[in-house]
Length: 374
Image (cartoon, rainbow, N blue to C red; front, side, top):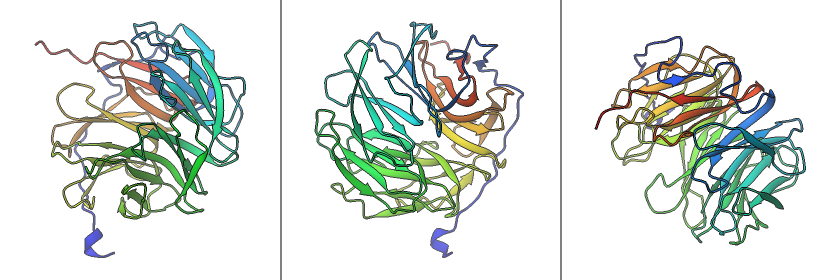
């Protein structure tokens, strides 16, 4: 590899705790979304019933049919009301929320494996009516993301299909997605996508995570042409998830990678837009399936949350420079965590954590980091 693409590695000083003291850990089923152990693949949130708090949407099934679920927040971070989403049980891998039909409330898009991807439209009070499907009917869908890619004022849908062409489904402004633009190559093993204006030119770019030791790429948007692409990572990663944040507070967005059976890493952005400078987040070679970023302790920098398979999930507290982190375990449990996210469940202004676990309870953790006096 030429010197242009040499990567510089830095092992990070970390310290290990048996559990994270900044979060109230789940005990029994009190801090779980129901009591069923499903093959859960995705968890997301949004104020579905317009009452001012974050509700939870859980996508279940993966390769096997199962009901997807909605859990309504009681305003205090409790979930005492739930219902199944839609009539059909499907092989769901992903669910995302957004105002797809432009009526001011949050709708739900669900991505399914080898089954129709489905839309659910909100009546404004948290009740859903199924709409048309989107994308190719029997694709290997692994993830979806919502963003206004064509800059016409509505949300489009990007579908990642493992070992198939990815898809961009264009919104007609009313929640119909009949126009489909195929994206990438037929053998792409794309698992995750982040949509973000990474080059600061006013449009939304695509940051793709690939498995099967395929190169990860940023695709820069130029009036819906994605011809310029920038590689990131080693070129042979087994990347399962990516996240975007300015972890070193230099004004440029960085890319965090969750990898399978190798070290997770951060690729730092700068004015050159090459993402060549890379550090290891942790020397451990976990089976990392998901990640998220947020300033959970409200100290002015971005912290990193990683969901693992057969290993405890980990929180990396940023020291402030984006290059050294204190690592803590969310708990001692070793779940198959397919998705993990920061979300403020109890409206106290601090980010809590929700986990989507396969064949285990889906649980949440309440943030109890010491509050600073103002």
